[in-house]
Length: 628
Image: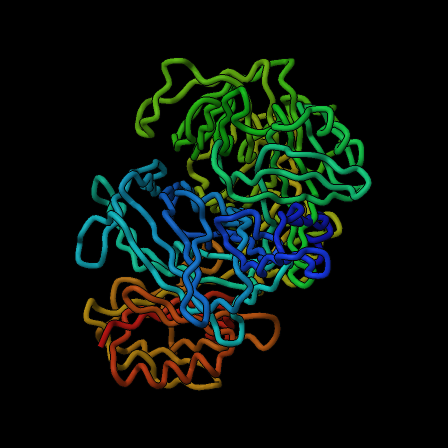
């Protein structure tokens, strides 16, 4: 699956722009030599003595439609106790946007040193948190474990001794923060507003376990055609102001560009950016080479192709189509003149001159008929002047008759019915984290009797390998719905993940006081849960794709073992800190010492689950221990 996916996404490289001055004066020619300077992050004149840290933020999937908070600061601490701030200003983040990618939020000059920990502060005062209840969005309040509504939180993350952040002069390194929403929250969607209890699991990785595309936003500074690169002033998320550092985005001859709604490839795209001029907004997507400390772009948007530049934009999934009117569910609205906000339903009108593009498709011959049910889209146009930022208000009206629609890879999840050559039929459970019941497939077929049927949804798989799939097992597919009125097939898969590789998540909680006997055994061979423990709480499941497996219904105690290859992350959380390990033995040593003095509140593990052996092979394991 990884090879197939990487075949679609070419590499992306972002290198820091040239550093500022600094250094020492030559004593052979200057009678009064100037003393050597140290890196001062607040003084650009000393940047030649600094190293650079790229700060990325991402999220593991959770039960949220929107989770927007303000990140106040991120401080790094050296081995000798020096504290350095890496975020220049408060940054507003919707973490649900970053399940499949990482956003680069800062390129900070910091002193060369070994950094052993970081502290992140989050402000919930103006948070926007929404969950799904009965197919509709419901606003939620976020509370601590004793029922207090959160205002500000602080979490100190201690990096693994084996993977500390080492910054050297003139070189860049990556630090990725992963806010695991699923592990961090328990959701009760019944009350109004819904109630969300949080125990924040935020991990920091120098060498990320999950390889994700990276997104970089910011206004253009300049283009260098000879090095196939351009430089931007970094502006993460939808920030329009602030200094988050400078980044140089490298491209290849295959990099796709859309600049001012025109398509280009490679050097022609760079020339289009240069013609657009300094200050032109850009968004680049691609991958980070940790060893080379480089990013390379596979797709770049510029000018009016960037959502929210001189025109409003809306991002979401098409759940219904009535002629030229599209209903977008789970929408984020990006106004051109104010900050982005969540609104669950937006009705968009398209027309004959609406331009249509599709990720990975290098032609401009698509028409609005290509937009079908389930499709993930970004639409540029104008929202009605009477539109409101209240997510629970009636549908927002949006005019894209003179605008642009860009179609993105769409994610399906379900259970396999049958497998045939070049095709699989599934019971469709969800599309991009929304339950299938909210989607109206009327009109998707060549005739009414051929409309897409969620109980027998047909995915064209072409040459993708399907031999490992079995009926009744979960499946995840990424691709594009067929054009409206052209089904079957209902969907063309670009990548397909079978039950043996589907991301499986184990979550188990105990009572408020925790338990002193959470496991029947634990050691270097793994952890075996004690499912007969009478203190087990409300959460006791394995989520395998869209399937929920109740741990209490199994015939034996579930085992969690570390995977033997590739990178893994293990962490032990307390009330206001989190200790990270990249070696399972180090994690078990800490756990052995800690369990004798404190109780366990919860365990969370991510990996692949074998239903036949009742074993979860994990690349991430997190345990929450109460203070002794």
